[in-house]
Image 1 (cartoon, rainbow, N blue to C red):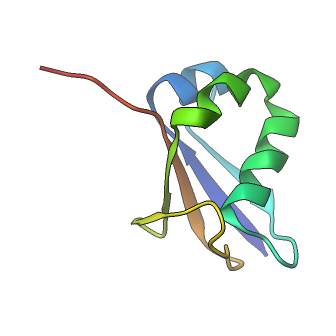
Image 2 (image 1 turned 180 degrees about the horizontal axis):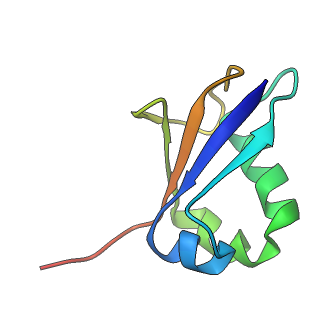
Image 3 (image 1 turned 120 degrees about the horizontal axis):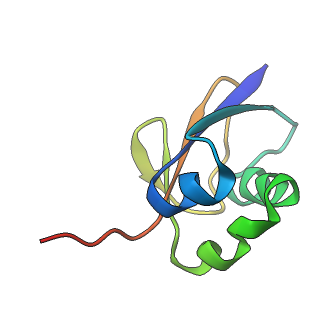
Length: 81
């Protein structure tokens, strides 16, 4: 099975895509999926300290498990007015 990863704002710009799929691996957590994504897109590393995560449309912490078939969103801080 796979995990769908959604990227927003500056993270999407750096990666050059807004959506991709990754293979699911046993023991996946938000952090492990993110780190595999960094292996593919090292330019995202500078965004990590301020990222928020959503797992299946609910905010998630880095240690939370990511089941196969899930959707994980990486959300950088945004400003607006």
